Amino acid sequence: MKSKSIKLSGNSYALLALLQEFGEMTSYDIKRALESSIENFWPVPHTTAYEEPARLAAAGYLSARQETGGRRRRVYALTDAGREALHDWATDSVAAPPQVRDESILKIFAGAEPGPLYAQGIAWHRAKLEELQGYLQLASAGEGF
Amino acid sequence: MKSKSIKLSGNSYALLALLQEFGEMTSYDIKRALESSIENFWPVPHTTAYEEPARLAAAGYLSARQETGGRRRRVYALTDAGREALHDWATDSVAAPPQVRDESILKIFAGAEPGPLYAQGIAWHRAKLEELQGYLQLASAGEGF
DNA sequence: TGGTCACCGTTCGTCCCGTACTATACGACT
DNA sequence: AGTCGTATAGTACGGGACGAACGGTGACCA
Image (tube, rainbow over all chains, first blue to last red; front, side):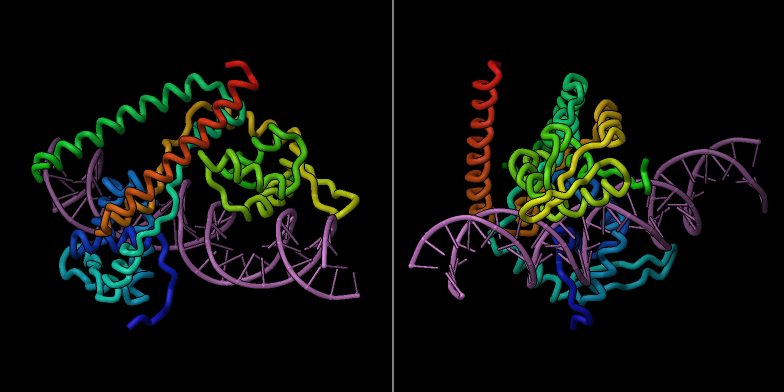
């Protein structure tokens, strides 16, 4: 039922995975979900939450239906094609190597004073660590790990 | 002396920094340099080593001169404008937060069997650790840290 | 003189992505 | 009721990023 064949990227699979997890979502739901957990291992700019579902729907991986009240937003959900594509991708257990993109190191490489950048980076990592430990607590509490 | 004003991205600064470090380089030199150290904190696809210097040169940040023998490759070097732009950027000690992009976690999020992906990831990290420790040794030996 | 291998370089089309901006709902305040 | 502020929600757009695929070049050896 694809009207148009497109190439699915990491971003695409991120959206498909969210929809698999949460069922129906509007673009805004997707945006918030991306900004909370997913961003930690797969950063995606917010406009993707609006542009990509349209692409995916056009290619038959998502269904879209219009809300009747309020803003009449589109609500997206996986189609069978979408579920299948996601499954095929996920079960191929060969993943691209992880990447790190750290502007502060690049600046140091370019000759910047390391001091302030290190300080900033350490603060950031501490905060992130705390955030993640929070998630871990939640998970432990919720699922009895 | 810019003939055209362009916006400099992280990739642009990565190239400028390389040229500051090594002086004159051809695209291929740049490509190899990107693939060795820089990739560890700022991944860049190899086509950038060919496309971006042209853009930078057009905007006056690089000079280009043609080799006389062999493949008559272009050799790039920083202009004063390039050096200055790099310096301005580097000395502004506010850096974007680091990002991680790890497809294997995304696959697990999508419902993949974690086992094989973890194994693969751990192997990868071990190898990377060794590589980096190698660099550290070289640095210690060379500069007496 | 041609084979082949490693090295070197480019083209192309699509997707990505940041910036800037717009619009809508809703409560509070007057 | 009006209007203001704020959070929520959504869009337009242009140029850079990126991967796939291909094309050339030169050294060396049979």
